[in-house]
Amino acid sequence: MKKYFFCLAALIAATPVSSYAANVQHGRQLFESICAPCHGSNAQGNVGPNIVDQSVKKIEWALNNVGMMKPVRSSNPQLSNVQNIEDISAFLHTLKK
Ligand code: HEC
Image (cartoon, rainbow, N blue to C red; front, side, top):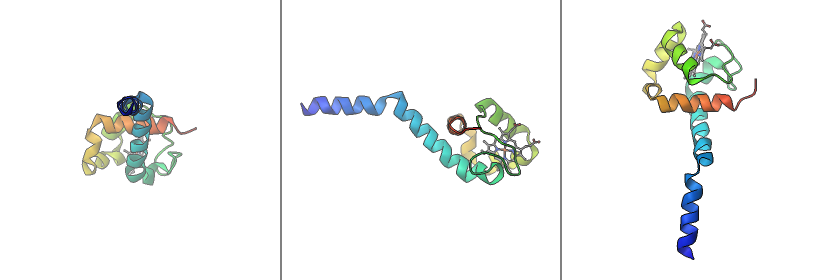
């Protein structure tokens, strides 16, 4: 019986839903520490524009091409990991326009 519950718990822990929630949570942490000062705490815009709902592609584009954002990647090496960009994008998709 104990074994059965262990398997069930492992199955629940491995479902995509809970890992998606973890990605969003991680994306929120990255966003708040790196992007929020320029894009606002809810991505509604500040010195930078509203970036609610932005895709991974657009974030990559901005990191490479927006003048004010070029130093952002060099001072935050974790942004070179595409998984982290995906997490930030997943968080931005949870915000309402
Ligand atoms: C130093 C300030 C600053 C920081 C930090 C910053 N940005 Fe930006 N970002 C800007 C500015 C300014 C623009 C707009 C430039 C323009 O329109 O010419 C911009 C544009 C963008 C765009 C393009 C939006 C559009 O509609 O064209 C995206 C996407 C973006 N930023 C994402 C991010 C993410 C994600 C982070 C955190 C990893 C971040 N930015 C951190 C200043 C910043």
